[in-house]
Image (tube, rainbow, N blue to C red; front, side, top):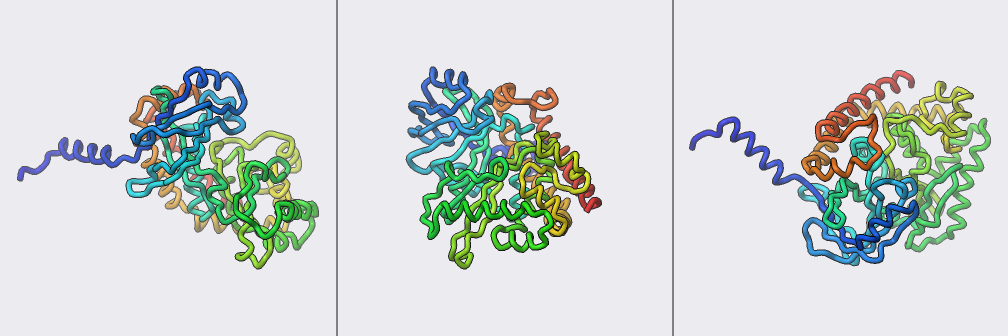
Length: 392
């Protein structure tokens, strides 16, 4: 048999890679006049009807509406979609996600469409609870609408938790939109009371027993790990991108015990919000005295100003950065993001749609730009990790 020459080998490898590339496609049809009008209002919009084909399967009726807060004013809106029966999305060559109700996030503020994947990947390495997600090519009425992330709804990943709350400003618990269908042996009022008790206790900045108090009610080690991750990632918006959920009582000796679920990592490699809490913290020197990246939430501020609690945080942060998020782990996550996004970058519709997005640094998206940005982020993460360890 005649050996393959170099060009043949290259073509064979290229065709094999293309053949096995994991690409999800969702083709949506809606009333054209409704699609035009939904972009004229910065409010939630429910389409009167929608049909969608997923990965070439026959069209199925679906419920479609816009969602989000800032995304309601985005040039490419975010959606939530619900089918009557499960559809199949590809996670990898051999792994599928069967789901009928999920979010479609446009990533219009995610520079290079890579931040969310980087953040979720590193959170998973820390064994933090995370949401199923996968890239999706979206078309609407046969026109390319760009690259999206199909994202699991938070309550769908908390099937054993009777109550779930999204943290809002000043630590307020929002349970209205996130009520679980799981029956609990305690009331929602009990859940809120237990949650608020943590925020009441942290007002005493000199309380040496605060760590023990929080540890009995919250997976504080997971919370510390997440704060360290936000600092590493320079996450400019994370305070209200967090869910608190109660573990089943049979696992917690009848006490209400909270764990956490982070869910939005779009604003990475950016400055923290310049609102009143962070300005106040800046005047008091906390940005220089601590490695915390933001002080918008009262719990984070309490960690900074309570010396015994901050020492516990630093110990966990050091362990996280030295052992759990090594340079090798960063390499693994970036490599995985590279493999996930690369197949989508051969579709022109990704770039034509991206012209509507909030492009950073006046860049025009291209395959080269996105993959080079991914390599740049890898270098930045490694450099910042070393800087933080020196500070600790």
